[in-house]
Image 1 (cartoon, helix red, strand yellow):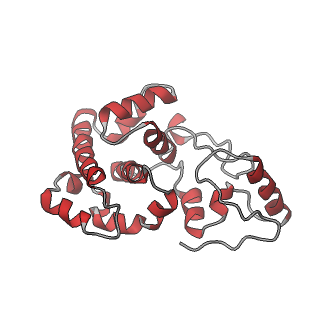
Image 2: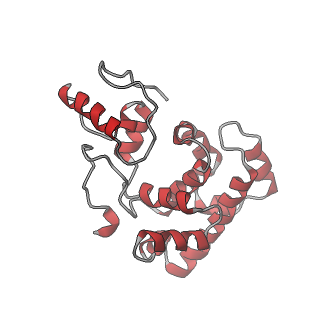
Image 3: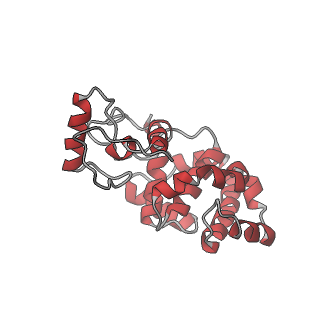
Length: 208
């Protein structure tokens, strides 16, 4: 992933990813505004790949159940690791998990687990790999019961804590941080865009 060269006046600090705005973020944003740059969350200004993720993916509506499942798995793989690492490996993970096809992943067996553990392009955690497979099977059950994964997600309890608790009870490897990350990524709750970001203040699609 290409790192963007920072203009003069921008701090050289490490910027937390997908986190609420800090005073340092605002100071850097004012420099960028003076230079005529588009306002977006500062963490997304510093890497070309993260800019694309921020602009086109984060908080945007997934097109289908497989895309909801993709965002669920990426958040599980993210647990305990940096988001930059996950997004750098995103295409490799997509290829290894059959494009995040729910039915394909649900059918994985011991040979697939061994294959994934040997693949340097994915997150080689056996617990996370097994969770991905079992969660695919859970999504299949949800689809059979509710008609679609999206329909289930839109029916989650109101309020952030209610949604998080429901996800924790339903899926494996879904702690509070992972659950919240998924909800924000899929636009089921509002992501913490910085106040000066061009995406700030938008209604999430799921509230329409």
